[in-house]
Image (spheres, rainbow, N blue to C red):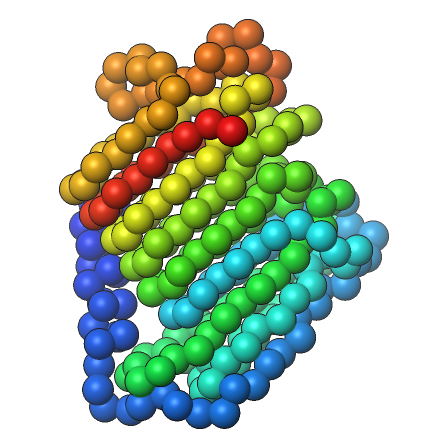
Length: 238
C-alpha cells in the first residue's frame, strides 16, 4: 500500500510539472555525447535517471555505455558519473533535481543509449514523465529495477538468456507492455493497481503469481516482481 501511494504521489507531481505555465521551454536544441568507456571491471551497476522526455535503450557498443542525449534547456543537460568499487564499475546518468523550476512549453529531452552486451549489468531505470522503450534482449543482465512515473513504457526481455536474474517493476500511470521469453522460465509475482492487466499465454498459480509453460523444467529463470499503478498493462511472451 505504501508503494502504491508513493507511485500515485510521484505521478501527480510529474503531471503538475508537465502542465505548468511559468517558464516555457523553447530553447535551442543541443546534444551531449554520452560515453562510459570500457575498462577492466568484471561487472557494472548502471543507473539511468530521466526526469521528463523520452528514453530509448538498446544493446550495441564496445564501450560500457554509448549514446546521445538531445535537449533544449540548460537544466536538462545530463550528468554522468563513473567510479570503481573493486571489480565493479558504478555508473550514473541523471538529471537529478534540475527540473524543479522548469515549466513545460515544448520540451525536448531525448535519450538514446546503447549498452554493452558482454559485461553483467545490474540496471536501474528511474523515470518521471517519460515515454520509455527498453530493448534489453541480448544483454547480460544480472538484475533489473524499473521505477516509472507517468508515460507509456515498453520493456523487451524476450529472446534467449544464459543466466537468470531478478527484476522489479514499479509503474505509475500509462500503458505498459512487458515482453518476456517463452523458452526461458518466467515467474511473475504481480500486485495489480487501478487499471487493466493482461497476462497473455501465462499460467495462473493464484495470489497474483503467473508462470510460463517453460517454468517448471527451466534451468534459467527470470523472477519478476511487479507493482502496477493506473493504466493498461500487458505481459506477453515472445
